[in-house]
Length: 99
Image 1: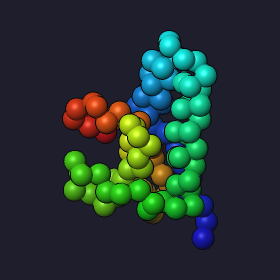
Image 2 (image 1 turned 45 degrees about the vertical axis):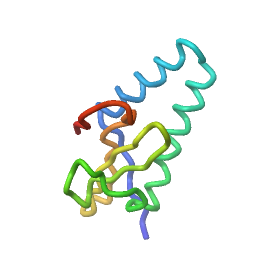
Image 3 (image 1 turned 90 degrees about the horizontal axis):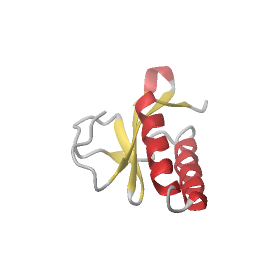
Image 4 (image 1 turned 90 degrees about the vertical axis):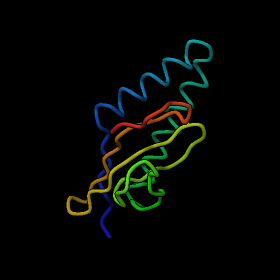
């Protein structure tokens, strides 16, 4: 089986930058580690695209999430393109997930 290509949407990149910047203001080392852990989570999807669970807000089996508490890595499986599109890095305290 060919690995899926994992790409980050512009929104996901912005989310990740905002998360790291926020934490870095009080703990730069923790921010760096968290950023790395979130990105490592996304890499697992290249071989296991359906690893995550369906996102409750969306009735779509191709929109899935991985949980790295308190964050959700929300992604879309694009079967025909063999691609995983990381849509958002979402803090569980935030309301109204938007893709």
